[in-house]
Length: 293
Ligand code: NAD
Image (cartoon, rainbow, N blue to C red; front, side):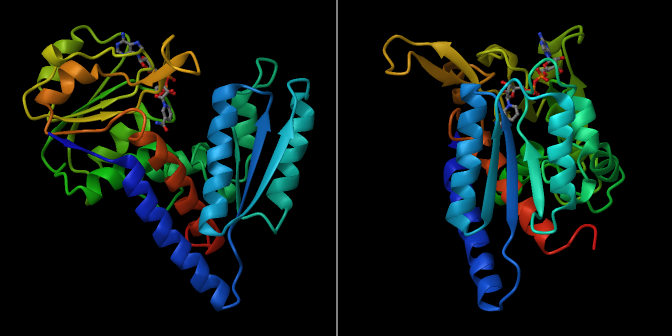
């Protein structure tokens, strides 16, 4: 069994980006600028945004963090989105989800200019992805593609079972892996909460992508010997022995699944760090006007 080290891989990609930025600086070209909007004080969102800003600093991007409290109205947030759409200084921006209940996430996502949608959540980017056109790929699936690619894991002709059909992970993952592309050409089964016999589907999988959000939901007896396991889940479980009072676990049960896997991503230190790296890669493309000209 080989561990897919997302932390190490993400570090080497960040170093590549850092080099590209140094070259841009040397040539007197524009430095990529990412902005992030953070609403409220959800601890997980705060930690994700902190890590995004830190990563920008590391690679030499400019970054702007716009923080507002929970009381912001939908109209006020839409105004900020419009300002960022029009600000030529900002190459790309993200609105950290989830948003407070009184704000419509779909409305906010639709208000983002697809040219600056470096999270790849806007339906224009999603549609372009589905048709194989140039687009910003959604950050988490993009990170997973990078992992499969750089660990030379063959996907062509393999049977992939994706568990979970969210718009940001499961559904785009199923589209990307079935595309005619270097990391693609797989036969994909997309499973979800209404799937009748998940175990039967999983036992046929050469590659499992687990994006459910239930701690240690998939166990070793549901996995074929030698399967590749990509665990997207990030779940907090109570743990009195930790200073924070909790620890992070994935959607697969590490102890029973890892001995059967050929490759597996750990939680933490697997898919999570790659998601941030993808965002940087998309911002670099935005700054170079690589997707939309
Ligand atoms: P979501 O809640 O939007 O979707 C969960 C999916 O799981 C749904 O499509 C649902 O049908 C499916 N599901 C629920 N119960 C099921 C069952 N019993 N059997 C089969 N399928 C079932 O979740 P999401 O936004 O895709 O996130 C999933 C997990 O991934 C969460 O733990 C989240 O924190 C994590 N996540 C991690 C990253 C990262 O960077 N590593 C990024 C995004 C999400």
